Length: 110
Length: 112
Image (tube, rainbow over all chains, first blue to last red; front, side, top):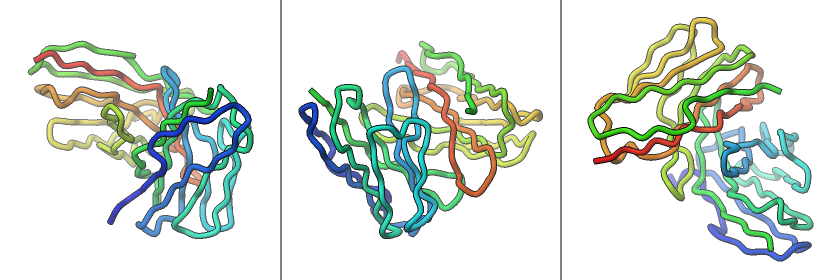
């Protein structure tokens, strides 16, 4: 099993550009989530999904969209990137409380 | 929303020393988790606690779920250089959505 995979590993965007961060898991987990990690702030929940077709907002959802068309994939979309979205983004999946994290995407918005 | 206070923020210790860190919350949690993050990697689950008062070990790591359900601690015994990293606590407050609240992390440095 590959576990949780994320692409790309690194990305640089200009302000106003859009992009999609990809996340996939092969553990057949129902629950998936996106976090951002900033220095001194820990991990903050952006959006989460409890199953295909069901998504909900987390703590810091503004500027991000998600969809969950399959159990395996949970992409995160930035519609118009802003410098405040410079961060490291982690995707996680779980069957219950024990979430497994991907390796992260380091995003810089200039 | 729920918040976790994790302390200390950072620790500098000598190889072989024991380490202790803890998390406290103003809210009750049903599950406590401890993660470790190596530089450039995603967090990795170390220990999961599901019952108030539970004490669980994983090698040199020991964690406890506080009896009030509002705190948890993690001990590392006989530290080694590869223990270096950021340690996060996380709590799950119940319900079916499995949302976790994370502490801000403890940065551990081990001097060989």
